[in-house]
Amino acid sequence: MSSLISLNAGPGSTDTRLTGARRKRPIGLTALIDVVFILLMFFMLTSSFIHQKAITVDSAAAGQSGADTPPPAILLLRTDLSVIWSADEQTAPAFYESLQAATADIAQTEETIVLMPEAGLPLQNVLNAWQGLQDAGINAVLAESVSKEVADSWN
Amino acid sequence: MELIRSKKPNSNSDDNLIPLINIVFLLLIFFMVAGQMQKPLATDITLPVSQAKESASAELPLEISVNGDMYLHGEKISAADLQTIITRTATTGPSQLQVLIKADKDMTAEKLDPLLRALNNASVTRIQFLTEESIR
Image (cartoon, rainbow over all chains, first blue to last red; front, side, top):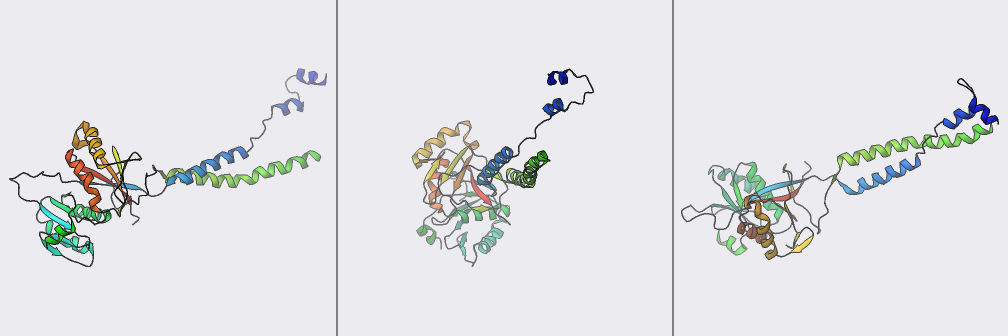
């Protein structure tokens, strides 16, 4: 009976039972934290901070040059980190020094050269040489590797 | 008086969680924005390091392990399979085919020869090597 009275009470009624029913209950934060923690774990485990980039390399097609074209200029990269350019070995303590010496020479020719690695040369060194040539503004194409015996015969 | 005593610990426990939520949210946003999601590689490959700035565009992503085994979409393939796949994929025009090579940095140059031969036979002369950006 008392609830009926309170429902029928007109505007301006100060009955606290009605206002108490309308008051919103605060949302619990525990469920939110659970979801956020799971998301955090997911992104921590799956994301990587190492940025991956690509080097574009032109490869030399076999038999690309015709009989009329002059023989290509070849830069041979050896496994002992020496470089042979125009059958002129330039051995240096550091691979990059000899490569720089060779690129300075090649830069004057303004022609596309063939980058030919020796069979046992790691890919990292091939790409380093390629990038060195690109930085020096030299057009190059990557050819198939040559064996140690062939490379030795160049000396 | 009894009512006040029963409400107090509840509101306190939620209030104490707010700094924790703030930090967790900040960490979450950091990892979402700064991190990159990458496909896992089929084999244990250590990518070479370079200062290249170009983004990789993978039309034919090929993985080559340190001992020369080739994988396409996680499946091991032979040099003969590779030749067939490259010839079949190069339908849009051979020179437009983008081959992305994910090779180990210690892989020797001779392991690359079957791939170069297959690409040359299909008249594809442009290949991309995936590298990790050097820190300096």
